[in-house]
Length: 127
Image 1 (cartoon, one colour):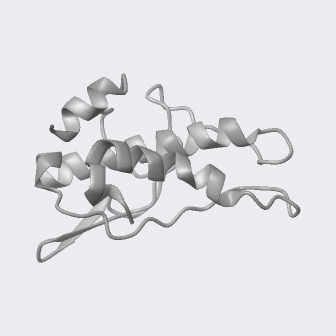
Image 2 (cartoon, rainbow, N blue to C red):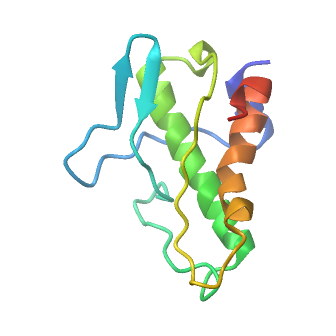
């Protein structure tokens, strides 16, 4: 089953790759590796999901924000590789969570992206 079929089964479609908001590129290639620049929870209408987890954003909402970030990363991967089927391994995911000082469930938030990668890429999506 292809990553695109898995996306469709999840009711998702790839957005256009987000345009960088600063002076950087969306990805860089080194040999057979593709390194992706940071992305955020940018909606297709150009608005950014904002807020602080533990204050005005719930863990469930933040999970969805991380999932949206993952979808944006997949769009960049698709643009870089030309086909998500060419991806042979997700090596690393680094996630940042804007949270209150007492919040401690960061993995539950970042799992929004991790779970998406696992669902789309199956065993090669684990990192």
